[in-house]
Length: 130
Image (cartoon, rainbow, N blue to C red):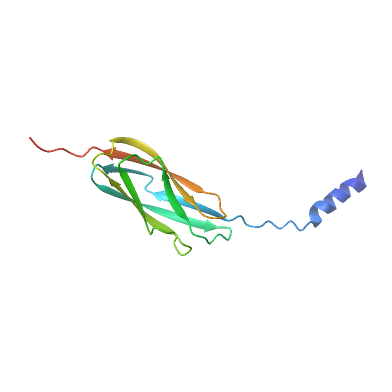
């Protein structure tokens, strides 16, 4: 039993168990909650962190964005030199007022997607008139 235990210990300690870094991306949003009035725009900032040797381009997509909200990301391509972007939300006059939970997804070749939650409140435009 002692010989077997010694063999297991030696085998466990003598391996060339080099752990390679795993390429990854991570995103953050600031603010993570915002309001946009019908017919107006709001902006937020996206921060991008690459790790584990990943140096590729990253694309941003939105899941669950309400109808009537147009999104733009500037710059549109998050190439290896880019670590932040500005997201602009333009609300049309037909965007339905209410609260929405949107997922912002960052994807790149060879890495798992990263997500961040965004809470949007569409506010009805003031109506002035007779």
